Amino acid sequence: MKKMTKGFTLVELLVVIGILGILMGALFPAISGAMLTANASAMAMKGRNLHQAITQANIEREQAGLQSVWPKDDSSKSDDPDDIAGMTFGTAEAYFQELFNISKYGDSDWAPYVNVDIGALSGSGVQAFAGGTTLNGKSVGWCIAQGVTDEMEDIIPVLVTRNAQIDALPTSSGSHDMSSDKTEVKMGKSNGGKSDTPFGNKAFILVRKGGAAETIKAKYNKLYLVYKKQSFTIPQSATFKYLAPTAD
Figure 1 (cartoon, helix red, strand yellow):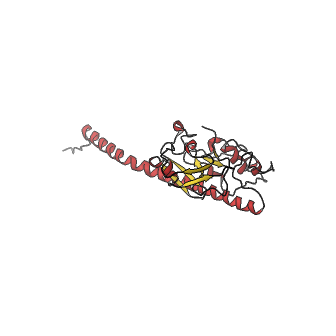
Figure 2 (cartoon, one colour):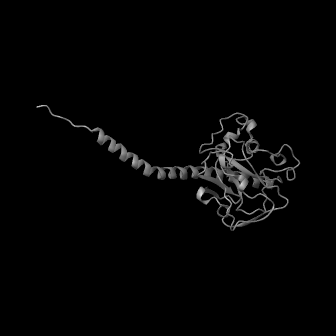
Figure 3 (cartoon, helix red, strand yellow):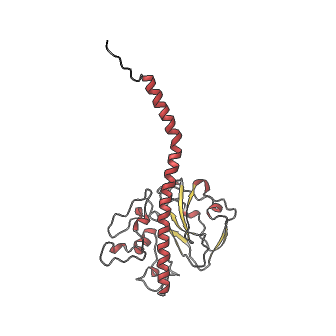
C-alpha cells in the first residue's frame, strides 16, 4: 500500500507566515534600538578620539608658543598665514582639510596637525574619505566649534554630528542659563540639520569641551537636558559659532 505524506496546507502556511510577521513586528523596535545604540557608541568613540587628538596637538603647540588648532576668526587668528592658527574657514570640511593636511595626503611629506585616523570624520552612514587631495563635505560627519577659548566651561559642545540643528545651540556672547530652557535641538535635514546622516531624527552625538562624548536621543533633545541644566559663559572677545560641512 502506498504511503501518503502530508505537507502544509495553504491555510496552515498563511498562519505560520502571519505568526512570523507578528514576531518580527514585535522584535523590530528592539532590534532598531540596539542598532542605533551600537552605531551611536561607535560614532561617539570617533568623536572622542578626534577631540583627544586636537587636545594633544594644542598641548604640544602651547609648549612651542603657538596658538591652538581650534578654528579661528579674523580677530583671533595668528599672524602666520602658513599655520592653521593663522587661517579662517567657512566650512567644516575646509577646516578638516587643513587639520589633516589633505592636500598632501599620502605623500612622503604629509604632516597632519593631529595624530588620529581620518576615519574619525565619518561613519554611521557618512561616507568615508576615499583618498585624493580634496576633502568633500559628504565625508565629514561633524560640525566643529569656532572660537573655543580656555575660559569656556567644559559643558559646551565643540563637536556635534551634522544631523543636529546646530542653530539651536547658544553661540552669542554672555551668560547662558540652561536650567529650564526647553528649546529643542531638532535632527535631520528637514528639521535644520545639514544632513539626515548619521542617525536621522533619532539621535545626535556631541563631544563637550571637557572631552565627554554623549548620545542625545530625540526624547532628550531639549537644551536644559543637553546642557545638564548648567550655566555657561561665552566671552565677549570670542566669536563663537559652529562650522558645518556642506549640505548633502
